Length: 93
Image (tube, rainbow, N blue to C red; front, side):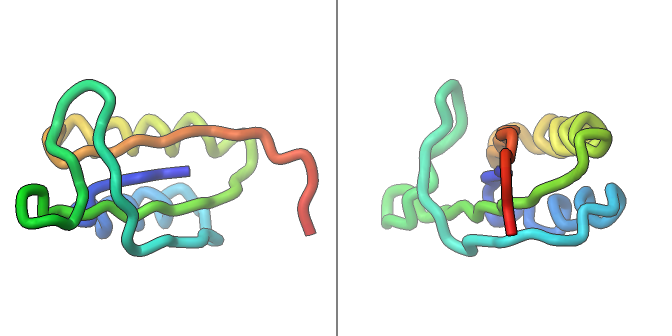
C-alpha cells in the first residue's frame, strides 16, 4: 500500500513502471495526517491538499527496490508526504 500527496502521483507511477509492477488499484482521493511531520491532507479550507492511495501486489524480489525508490521520492519532497507499507498476501483470485 502506498499513500501519498497527490503531487507525487507521476513519481509513484514512474517507480511502479520502472519496477515492472504493472497491476495496481488506485483510490484517487484519501485523507490523512502523517505521524511525525508534514501538513494534514484533509481537503478542507485549512488543509486543502489531498492524498491518493495505491494498492499493488508484487513479487517478493520487487519489494525492496520499490521501497527504496519510493523512499528516495519521499526524501526529495519530505513535506508532501509519502508512506508505503508491505503486507503478506496469503491467497488471491
